[in-house]
Image (tube, rainbow, N blue to C red):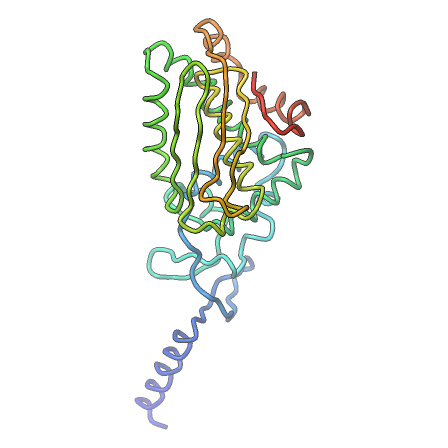
Length: 276
């Protein structure tokens, strides 16, 4: 076989591998192995969410490796990096806000978080605390002082959140700054919501977000895509937070909020949630 024929043979084999959707992802040991893959991981959720979870769990004493156990260097979660290289997801990838992950990987992460935190509705509690500690404590007082209407702020928050998710739409309805609101979450693919952890993530985030401008927030889920409904719908009720209360809350250390939330069982096992 001539050199030209050998080169043609190699090119042909590479074409066959590509048509069968095979690649050579790198392993953590630095080697390479040939694996069969279905496709590159869907880009559905921005890594800003996984970065927040990393920070939260580290504050609780859990290193990132435990949060993403079973995901790092897993050929089921392939990404295409600059230059066209197809590689399994890495911890550095998950920390980069420019990157995106699939709902499947997010659900895997939530299962790990639930196992590490334990107790009733751990993902709900984690999501609620991330929002209340990082958003309410630091920005709530500023919003009140600038006299920004909560409904206007909620609308802007939805617009901003669209930058970080590609397959779900959130709508705040029947908004009343003094009493509460309804929230509807619609997914382009409803199969992604067929797990209670996704529902708890959403509900906890809405309760924490509402604590920016309200207190004694209660939540309940009235419909769910898991049950075949058109959307996941949550009803939230609250009491208006006074300016002195907001200022007092704004000086509470975020880490202390995390400690109080996780170590206090409180509402964790109840149907409706409350945040003081």
